[in-house]
Amino acid sequence: IILVDDHPLFRDAVKRVLDREHDFKVVAEAGDGQEAVRLAVELRPSVVILDIGLRGVSGLEAVRQIKAECPTTAVLALTVHDDAEHVRSMLQGGASGFLTKDVLGGEIVEAIRRVVAGEIYLCAVALRHVVDSAISTAHTSSEAAGPRLTTREFEVLSLLAQGLSNNEIAQRLGVSTRTVKGHLEELFAKLEVDSRTAAVTAALRLGILGM
Image (cartoon, rainbow, N blue to C red; front, top):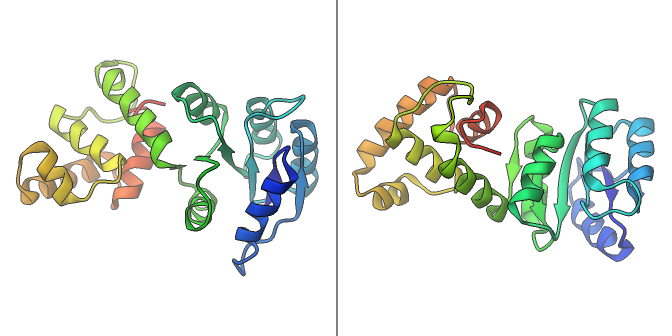
């Protein structure tokens, strides 16, 4: 793992969290985007944890350069900026995950494991932005790839992306949990996946949930 942030104290706090994991190793740290790219190219880490607001080379440009030079390296954005435009730009630039800086401890560990496994990981705030954007634009777009979903399937998928349980989805939609399970089975079949996490990840990559 490479840590990139212009605040040494914050890097220290993150490093202390990561050092508790026996299979994690922070191999380098950087305080700006240019150094982040250089270290990533030199060390080829599994993950780069990157702030957006970097000096010189911006976080977004650093993500693009790192992914161009090191396509197998996952980039996890860790930032105070949680607006929809930052989320969208970082994901489109090649980031595999997005966390706000108030999220540490178990969630950052989980996020790292997910992006290393090839999944997309979004904290709750980022996920809300993605889902809100999806609801307003993606369902009506003829350009989205992948299978076409019914309105109800799309609603279930959007609520699934927010982390709601089957019971919570049923309550939100005013249907039975059995009905929700049926919609999930249809979603899994259409997306060719076998889990809730895989369904959301596939929907993001296909553009069904807009970024």
